[in-house]
Length: 500
Image 1 (cartoon, rainbow, N blue to C red):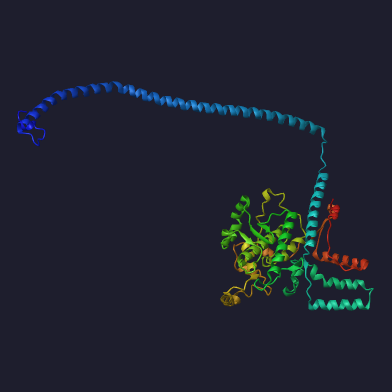
Image 2: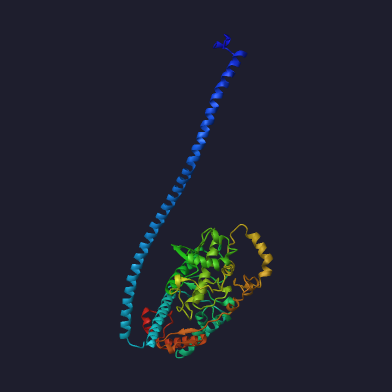
């Protein structure tokens, strides 16, 4: 560059001559660099062509090496499994040898044993054991009934008062006519000794039926207004029933549908969380709880009433569950309780205690204490009957509900009796399924009373009338011999001896 301006360090522009000189210089440099670049690219291409095959071989080598490692690992695992199998085979061989030795010993003993077994003797021993078990269960239940003093109350009736007056006159005129006096007394106490669901007791008018008492307290068989009923008189018999039911269930070996928990004076009842039972409930029981939505939220229900009646709804649900347990217990003992009478708690308990087949069936020998899936009574039916038994009139909305009840009283008057018991047509009008299995339970009848004896051939089934005649004859004999008032019959464990 010959321009003096272009040699200055603070220049802004080059002149045309200088720019032409720079362009020529760059073209000369480019002419020398391009051939070098082309030669280097050609050399690199030739080198890459030479090493591409080598790289492919190396990749294949690595792939096959990984495959060999996987095969070695699988081989190691297979060898370990083979070793385990070898040890297992060795153990099985040792067990086979032991079993063979046991079989040889058994064959040797069998050859030395008597040829014919006395099946009659074995059967007789089994029958004696079974009879002893059943007899012991009945004795324990009888002792429990006597301990809790579960018995009917005394109700003055016009017809019975006439017989009482006749008995008093006969006793005043003569002291030797003990047979007639015993007959009158038996007539006086005839209604007391009848089972609550026997055919003869069903002939008594509904308003003359006596309430049952447990330890001096009772649960009436009529409509109960809990707001006007003393809480102590209502909670006490329920707690006693829960306690007595727990003892009876333990003695009989029965698994109830609902679990009862006792926490002092506040018992609760809830569903069972056993997985086998829950699986059964999904099959049958939960089908009856579709309208019972609160059951899914709170599965624990109280069996007591608070002073302010806050837990009345849960109390009714708990009583329905308790009545369902009692109905199921009676079903296991071959007692048929109509759905319309399931709300009679004490009557159901008494029916179970007086069952003719008491103690014969038990869940103790069943697998995982599974319940019987053929129980015909649905829970919703028991819940409806229990709701009609208890009411609470202390709420502020009682007047409005009373008006609604008056509108529907004409429709339901033919379904409810005077003491709040349901007719069977109530359940036939609104069935939950199309089956007619409840028709068999509309009749209240007993199958009879089972009489035990040492000889199996003497075991017989007598009718209910014959049983009462025998009781009256025994009562007359006791009065003639001892001339003492009749007491409650109790059993003792000493009486197990006749069953041996």
